Image (tube, rainbow, N blue to C red; front, side):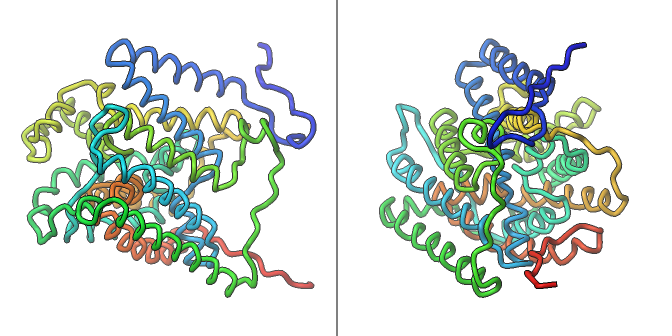
Length: 411
């Protein structure tokens, strides 16, 4: 059989692994064939959302845009590049979202934000999710793109993420009965110009604060390793600067708002997939209060391909697979240390359970929640950071690394 890999490029890309042509071909076939299938069976709009999911997966992989690692290295080593990239992403997203949400329409499509109550359920859920991020080794978006990139450990995290999501859906009515504020939209309460100015001020303060703390710890900002690619080769094969990923994620979330009528979310699909599996096994999940709402009942009884979140999640996995093939880095490792496996199990359950209680994850509650002007998005990130701090301290118990910057010495 002929070798389908493409030879190493000359110039800046020299020395990189060969492009894995088989992986790239399979990913492109799945993305384009899937879009054709979804477009025929559901709608062209749904097919476009599937491809946006693919673009999100490619961006997340090429930019290595990890929320979990960004939080961890800041807590452990005061490196703030990841947090600064998140502030750029949020600032651009809010600038795009707030006027559209205030108008109620975008390019002729009615739009609404992901605005949820902020109460005990969010506090507990975000805290558990934060611990789960560090033990599971990723957030919601991170789990999907690393699965697509070939991480076998994250397959375990994803499976138990789904398990935890189903359990959280089953318990959610009890948590919803606990004390809570009503849904609060800062865009509605303050008007979009004031809400935007307030949010931008917070983002700027966090951005500046991370610079101050990083310089205090290291004497300077830690530079990222120089890329071995440039120009078109860097665009196709990565790695991308974090700021590229920040801008691309904000723009793709805005495209999601325009097509779906609401921002990007991830974890609702996990509860749906797990509940459908239980229903196929004979469990009467349709009787659960969580699945009684008309929209939820429709999703449970309908095709997965008709669910926006599901098709975008599948697209993310395939987009990351494409990116891994282009980078020549798709190389699954099947041997997992027992303690690391245990952390993936525990972390996955906490991620799934916490995301249901908190009305979303790092994407639906944090990124899209704040971009929607939802007060619960700010409650989520503050509480999730506490969970991440605790989870970072627990990582060594499971044999997981906590990254430190090597000190420069003359020895």
